[in-house]
Image 1 (cartoon, one colour):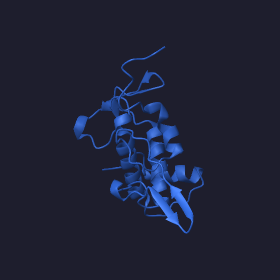
Image 2: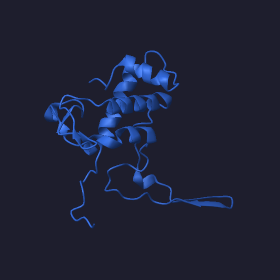
Image 3: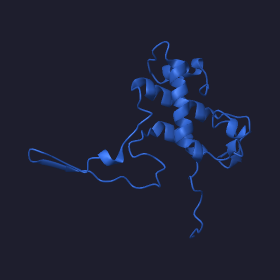
Length: 160
């Protein structure tokens, strides 16, 4: 399975952003970054994979839209490629950061140490769509914003 974009594109993206990329790690990082984009945002992209369930990646897609226009069914948007590059860089910067695992039973609700006490608030329940500790990148969110939609679609009743 290959990642979105290519090694030269990732190297150019990283250089333009002022990132240093260790040699020999680009392909693996791109793979992990692409897997993160597909796994985190795949259900939120409009349309469906052009190749159906047997397609390796979420893109290209049939019926996908951006800014009110339908995208070509063989297109992988540059925004998806750059978001995968950003995710790849995050993975290179801190290996394992894109694949967070957690055990809800081990969460700390209150912590007290020598007179100092902290209480933690529970994250908002979003129907278990995202793990509370899942990494969020405003750069990735911004790049993908025109391509994603609510998981459950629009409300059944809209008040105007």
